[in-house]
Image (cartoon, rainbow over all chains, first blue to last red):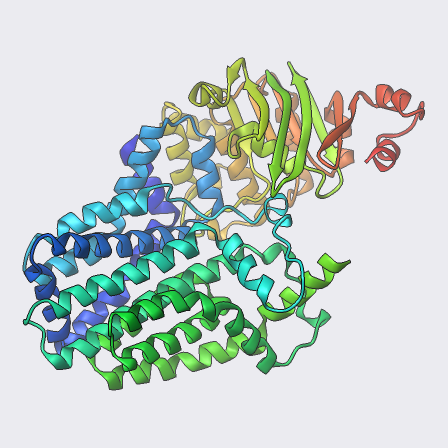
Amino acid sequence: MLVAGVRYRFANGLRAAMSIWGALLVGFAVAEGLHAAPPLVAWGRAWMATPFPRRLLLDGGVALLFGLVARSMFASSVGAWGAEQLDVLPLNRAQRSAIDYFSTLMFLAPPLVACVAVCGSASPVFAFVLAAGFGGKRIRAVSRPSSAASRHLLPEGEGYGWEWGWLLRVGEERILFALLTSTLAAAASWLAIRNNDVVAPLAVLRIESAFVAFAAGLLASAISAARNLARPYRVSESLVPVSSAARINALLVTSLPLMLAPLAAVALLRFSLGALLYGAFSFALLLLIGEARGESVVMAIAVVAAVGGALDARVAIVIVIAMLPFAWRRAVITDATRDLRVIRGEAAA
Amino acid sequence: MIETDRVAKLIGGRPIVNNVTISIPSGIVALLGRNGAGKTTLMRLLTGIWKPSLGSVHIAGHDLASDPVAAKRELGYQPEHPDLHPRMRPRELLNFVAAARGLARGEVTRIADELEIGGLLDSRCGALSQGQRRLVTLAAAMIHRPAALLLDEPTNALDTHRVATLKRYLQSERAPRATLVSTHQLDFVVTIAQRFILMRDGAIVGDGSVEELGAQLGMPGASLEAIVLRAT
């Protein structure tokens, strides 16, 4: 049963979700080719060198981060029916949990191997075993948007205020978990690089950039998933013509406040301004891309951006510039603002 | 076989399904109502995908809340949307369902033959038409010969031949003992269902045969369409 369940997960999206890690592995290969891997290796050594009990916080932060990534990628890749199928089968709680846990562990195998290689130690296995627990808990696809489930979420009032609250309500635990996780990841990274001397000063900025970009991707992915839940209420864009500038403006104004918590945490932890700006800019672009391409693409690009940030500031800038056409395409073709305005009109009616 | 006792589902404080009590011991029963009447929500409550806010659901005598494994052994469910992962093959799905239900692999071939989808088993789901995907989900719902079957919009995207196949299957000896069909296709259900449950705003507003519903509504001799238009 367990093997059949994991194979089902593999057929039903796990294989596609795992392929996203390909971007990370390619990033590592490129880093090796450019002889730019030392920042990542240094972070790995710093992780290993952090003394107990601080190390536990670091392990927990890494586990939470990867656990949420696992859950997020599953949600965006497995599809709604896969989850419903599991729900209607006569499986007890232990069987469901085991299928979820081992599927997650399998999903985390590529980054686990990479971490073990970078750190030169098997110690990260502990963090990944924990991560499978976080990611496997109630890991399932986001249910197909149900008119009954989302009808009550129709916003009320005017202005952007309700849109923030609405996003939080629709996104539920995914957004809150992303906020918590990105903040913890930032704290764990800070602990690693500030509390031991194996990291060179130049590497610090790159490591910070990597983590902030990754956290930004995580959050953008969660928000994109939340917005996808509103699709039953999205209508033909021809109904409400809105300028591209207004669309971008509304999307960012709606979502940027959600990034404030991890950014504030980064600032409080005395991360550099450069990393802060890089993370904020990445987040904004990833959000736009998420609207057009979906959460899994956001995560793939975030991984590339994170690796780029870890390599070199110039690489990071090139990656961010490369995102612009995606983001602009999103702004021109479709628009969440229009949908939200239509929703507002329906609610008023 | 399928029983609910004052089931209600509140979402955001609003009743989506309100105080619904039904009993379907056998036969084919149609669930009818407007869009948003609560049909799919009721279906999800009957499958255990959602938990009711109030009341209870029993499948073949098993309480879905306290004994979900036993209840789901007797239950088959075809969801409204056949969302199969594009890279998955129908055989992979059906093999897993068979394993989860403790069936031999041969059952996959059997149900595929019965629904005439044997040729689709090794295709990618992404390459199948909407109607073909629906048949795959139907096979997953019926592979274990359930005692109670729930079908949510089963004829959507099916061609005339497939609808006829489905109709024959539901009227055959192999059919489940009790089947609840949620649909808007009146011409389909009127030929196979013996009983019709009408829903409006989450509540049941009519339950019976066409003749009984006509009498209840003061419309003796009315067609099912006229009754549905009036009552829902």
